[in-house]
Length: 341
Image (cartoon, rainbow, N blue to C red; front, side):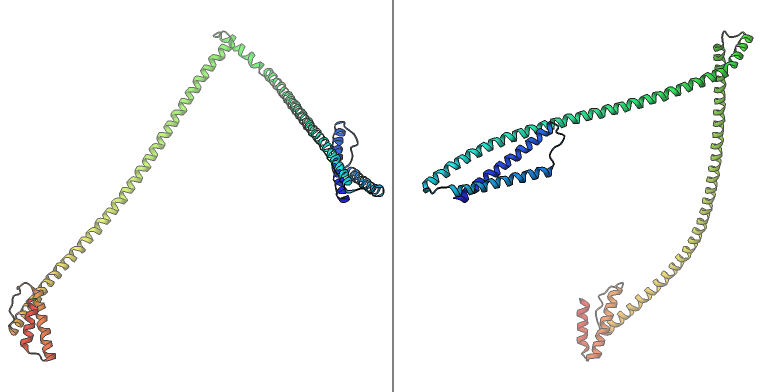
């Protein structure tokens, strides 16, 4: 039972320690908002927390010793009732601590929102200060540019003044010319007239230059046409020479093929004569064989292949006779059957 009570007290002291930490954070927030010039260092805060834990442990040990020394012998129901009362007090104390912890948490959240708002305002202020600095720098740069432009305009005015002083004799000369001629009313009218004349002269010069350019282009086109014509003429001559060469080659080919055709015709005539001789020899052999073996001749006179087959068959039969000694009548009957087939 003492161990359970010790654990409950230890838990209560841990809750108190957490509450003290929350209060310390809140106090630190208050010191920050109050702009304390000397806030606590992290090492100092750790030492303070350790000292508080040691004090709580020492207080717990003292209470345990005092309770062990002065606690009378009581009956178990009384101890149980006291334990329940202590538990109720501890529960109430824990609820109070939880309520205070929620209050401190809400205060911390509000303080965090306040810090965020302060940071946002500070960021906006810094942004506005940066924009102001940038605007001031831009204005200074614009002022410097305007100063440089003004200095350049002043220099240009001085140059124009010097140029006017240098051109003043020409004005006097133009006024003298106007007085001598008596044709124009004032100097600008005379200048306009001479400007028109200068423009006409420039136009005529441009037209003459354009005519010269057109003439040069025409000459260049004529030269290119002559070159192209000569090139085409040379190509035509080369083509004509190639055609003459091909014509001579074609003539040589014609002569060669004519001689070849004559050779082919003579060879064909020789082959035709040889074929006629072969047909006549085959016919003679066929007639001699059929007359010798007394075989009826139902083959056409122009069927040389059939006649040759019959002669070969008869010769094969005679060879069989010579090899086996069979009667000629049997061979003749076989020959007749095969000839009919």
